[in-house]
Image (cartoon, rainbow, N blue to C red; front, side, top):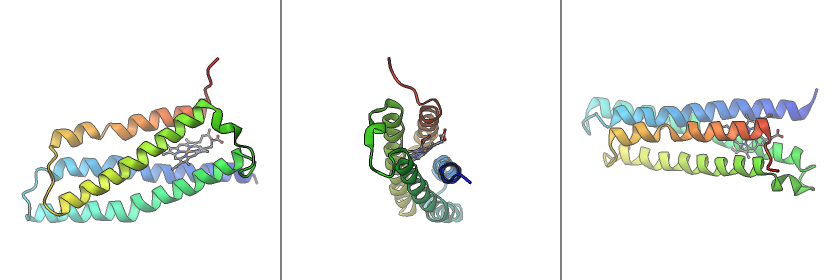
Length: 151
Ligand code: HEM
């Protein structure tokens, strides 16, 4: 058995769970904006958002990071040879990782605002914002699968 391939598979599985949460949470926010603060619907959405964030998204992000860092380990001869970091595909991929990690925390802050009845953002904002993580995922997945380079 090849450890590198196993870790790649586990990385992809963790990423699937993380992406599912990143795409679903703003979708819940879209409907949550329509709920009257303090209503039963409001409380139900708050509970769904809290569970999704704590039980799925946080652990999935941590596991995706741990396997991702392990893959960097394989690619650098166990953190000896860092030349892979001069390759544009990896730089683009890691820029996407930074963006998605920031976006995850941005959604976490928004979740707390909803829970406090202080959401200021519109249904339209959450609908549009919902596209961003998927656009990032397209760029990131194609960066790692093509390993593109210039010249
Ligand atoms: C959380 C931090 C992450 C880190 C540190 C990380 C890092 C890496 C590294 C170093 C590789 C190995 C590339 C190779 O050796 O072929 C890899 C593979 C991969 N990553 Fe990530 N990644 C992260 C998150 C993500 C996310 C969010 C996505 C999708 C949106 C993703 C999608 C993939 C895919 C599909 C592969 C497999 C590519 C292949 O084997 O051909 N990763 N990742």
